[in-house]
Amino acid sequence: MKKFRLVIVSIIVVAMFLGCQQANSPAVAIPAVPSATYKVVYYANTIDATGTVPSDSTAYLPDSSVTLSGNTGNLSRSGYIFASWNRMADGSGSGYVGGATLAQESSDLKLYAVWLPNSSYTSYGNTIEIKNCPTPPSGTFTIPVGVTGIGKMAFMDCANLTAVVIPSSVTFIASSAFKNCVGLKTVTIPSSVSIIGENAFSGCTALTDVVIPSSVTCINRGAFQNCGSLTAVTIPSGLSYLDDNVFTNCSALNSVTIPSSVTIIGKEVFKGCSALNSIALPTSVYSIQDGAFSGSGLTSVTIPTGVTSIGSKAFNSCANLASVSLMLPTTTLHFYTVLPTDSQAFDGCSSSLKIHVNGTSWPTYRSAVGWSAYATKVVFL
Image (tube, rainbow, N blue to C red; front, side, top):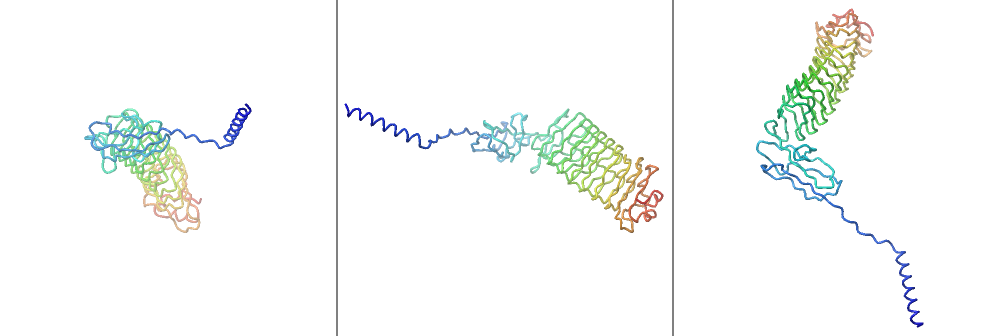
C-alpha cells in the first residue's frame, strides 16, 4: 500500500514538473493560412479576332500592383482597330492601355479588348487617330482610351456637342478638330497633349473657359479665334511663341496670363478682344507683331525693356488706350524699339494717349522713323 501511494505521489510530482516546463517554454508559432490569390485574364471580346490575347500566369495577392500587357499577341479584327483594355465587355468601365498599373482586387481581374471601327478611326504605327464622329454627337462625347490623336476636322460643325472628355492617351489635337462646335461649353485638355492645331477650337462660341496644360508647347494659328464667350486663359509655361490670331475676336476675354517663356506676340493674337482691359507682358517678350492688340479694350500697357520691335497697327483702334510706357534701359542714348514707317501702331487710340519713355531717349523717339507720327504724344516717363 505504501509503495502504491509512493508511485501516485511520484506521478503527480513529475506531471507538475513537466507542466512548469511547458509554461515557461516559448510559444509555438502556428502556420498562417495562405492568402487567396487571383489572376489577370484578357479577353478578345469578339469571336472574329485573329491573334492571341496576352497570358499572365502570375498569382496576385489582393492590393498587389499589376502592370497590364499591351496587344502583345497581335490581336486584330477585320474592319476594326484594337485600342485598349476595358473592365467591362461593353466598354462602359475604366479603360487602360498597355503599361498601365492598377491594384489587384479580391477577385480575378478581367480585361476586355476595345475595338474601334476604322470608318471613324485610323491607325499608323503606334498612333490611333479619331478622324470623324462615329455618329453626330449630342451632349458629352468621351473619346476612348487608347486614342492618341484627334484628327483634322474630326468634330467640325458638330453643333450639338456640349462637352468632350479627352483621355490621357491623346497627345495632339489637329487643325480644325472642333471648329464651329457652337454648343461646346467645356473642354479639359489633358497633360499628355503637346500640340493644339490651327483653328482647333475656332468658332466655339459657347466655350467659356479652357485649361491649357504646361505640356502644350505649340498652339497654332487661330486655335481659339472667334470664341466669343471665352473669358479667361492661362498660357502654358512651355510656350515661346503666341502664333497669329490665336485669340482673335474673343470679345469676352478679360484675363490672360502670359508666362516668362513667351518671346513673341504674333500677328493679331488679341485683335478684337474688347473686354481685355489690361495685360502684363513679361520681360522675355522682344517682338509685338502686326495688329497684336488691335481693337482690344486695353487702357494702358507697359512695353518691357527687351522689346525691339512693334509691328504695324499693333495697338490700332484701342479706343480706351491712354497710356503706353516704354521701359528702356536708363543709360540708353538711342531708341531700342523700332516702329515701321507709317505703322499706324497707335492710330485710333484715346485722344489723351501719352507714350511715356524713360531715360534720355524720349527726345530721340519724337523724331525717329515711325515714332515721329506720335511726336506730340511722346513724353518723359
